[in-house]
Amino acid sequence: MLSNIIPFAHSVLADHIAPGDTVVDATAGNGHDALFLARCVGEGGRVYAFDIQAAALQATQAHLAEAGCGRQAVLVGAGHETLAQHVSGPIAAAVFNCGYLPGGDKRCITTAAATLSGLRQALALLQPQGVVAAVLYPGHAGGDAEAEAVCAWAASLPQQQYAVLRYEFINRTNNPPFLLVIEKRTV
Image (cartoon, rainbow, N blue to C red; front, side, top):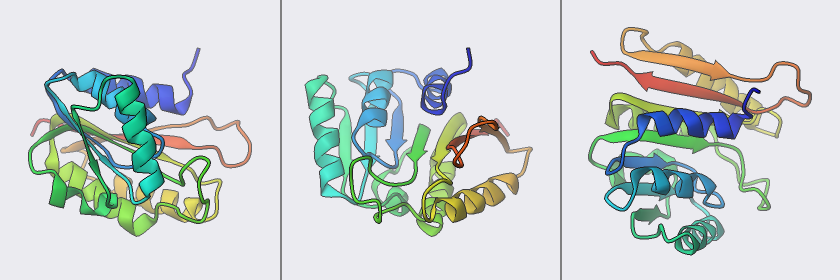
């Protein structure tokens, strides 16, 4: 059976993350990706979780604490376009789950400019054979422009340095989300 977008993204991320690694959740939201990443890196690893909304960071903190995974997380109250200001070392993986906070204000969305900046910074920090996963939602206002811009940028990455995969269901209605995975090759 084919996996839905998020479970597939998590399976790809899990294949590239080892205990003790440093990883990034570029859009903390309700903390589901941060918790998944925290479990992957274990107590010796580090998860940097970014969000501009206090409610998202509070939800993420509560989610991590409830699961006993709060110690390895650093919550950053800033947008992912500031990623390199907060993360200095190599990272094994990053996940961008774009759009808006589920259950939150649908007018507060990720933007093409901020997401592209964050993706560029994540790639610069990415260790060889690391991955960046970006879930894009073209079905909401502003999401289509963001998805188009990110896809155009990803398609322009040199194939000698990066492998880019697009995973999507093409027979679903209402502009369903899709996943881009960028793997940094050993050069």
